[in-house]
Image (cartoon, rainbow, N blue to C red; front, side, top):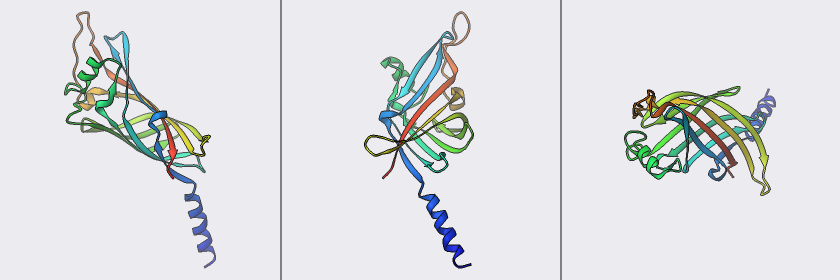
Length: 188
């Protein structure tokens, strides 16, 4: 019995060696969104400043955890006047709530479940999950690619600003489509 216990511990410890913590590479990742404008087109935007880490099990190719934050004032829709408006209390209230956060709770198949916090409001979210796998880059780093996408209702987070259009409908849609592309580098 004494020989079995050390052997079992060795196997369990060896399995843990294949799980690693990855730092999100902001140069090769994207935090994007899209929302209806005037009910007929979309405004696309992104956040330029963000960070995050995730744990990935290389033996099973599974995502174990993911935590990320986005600097709200880094919003970029390629229109300075609109970006400034989005930073105000009518939308993100960036001065009062400088960060948005996401914390993964679990992945089941092609679906990720987590907690998204915007403007101090935390809601459960369900996102489509894509595991793009792992690769060694030309410089010897191990990289993993992941993608998350889905929809949220901005009203759920206190972003209720809108204008009624003369012909009916609203200037800004309630539904925001999220598109996140992550590339992580194994921490050394």
